[in-house]
Image (cartoon, rainbow, N blue to C red; front, side, top):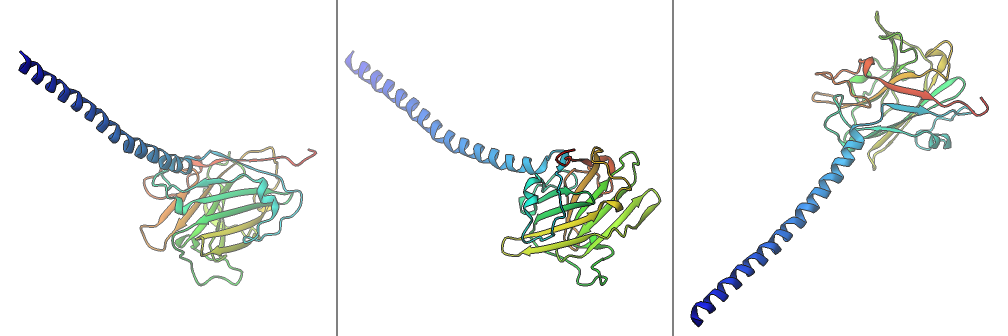
Length: 265
């Protein structure tokens, strides 16, 4: 009877060893899986934060005129919380190396915009009018703002574009088509080639946007980026338009732009 008992004991030990080894192996496999999952969650969280921005931005009040200097921004810009985006016009394919941050300020007579644009490559025109205006500027790299001071006029809004080299265009969009806005905007641009960030600041007279500016009125707005000179190009949007083909002219997709009142009002 001793021999069968010894064999049974060895068999039981082998089973226990296999069970123990299996448990250890499972733990060893779980660790990298958990690490991989955490890494994916981190990456996904970063993408989501860039791909699903808030649908509203707030423009603080600036009590005096701001000197435009894209390379050395005025202190007032720190009061303006940025909106960020890096996904395409459909809200897909986020690319943090093309992230755009937009800030807005306003004073009694001026709307200020500041763009900080990460880029992979730069493509710009080398010719423009004497004042820097360039028709069809959108056929190269640009940052764009579509502003709708009167949302009740559904198909009417203003379009502003600026390129990394300072070229610009402004347009008045209406149901009858588009026309030169002749806004009298001024701008400053700066390219940091080492960090691959180009920056632009715009000062737009409020009188070209609305005859009677009311800071209590909520505007509609959207912000965009275009990068590249030949298809497939990159078409990035703050608020996705969700069109089948790239199309920024979708005012029903615009977000909200609110204005903080000045102190004492």
